[in-house]
Each structure stands twice: as structure tokens, then as C-alpha cells.
Image (cartoon, rainbow, N blue to C red; front, side):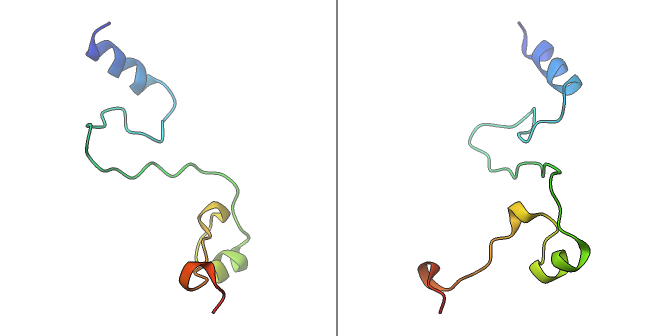
Length: 65
């Protein structure tokens, strides 16, 4: 199989969190996959619509100080 054939197959498939043309040794941010979401007011309280991204800061090393 050629690289062009593989790239064409990837483009036609569902979107992957990793870009189809990712370059080795380059940083990237995976695509956000849409999933469970908070209600409007809860999202505003947490600062994010997605519970999976809710990572509250608890202080140094997870201590609640």
C-alpha cells in the first residue's frame, strides 16, 4: 500500500483524535471528542462544558489548602 492510499482511506473514515497527517516528533493537541456535557449553570460554575475536562485546582500536590 502506498502512503497516498492510506491517507485517502483515513480522510474518508471517521475523524480520529490524532490528525491523519501528524508529523513524528511534533506536538499536537488531540481533537475534542463530543461526549457528556454539563447543564448550563453547572458548566458556568465549573468553567467547562465537558465533565471530562473538569480538573479543579486543589493546591499543592492535591492538598486542599
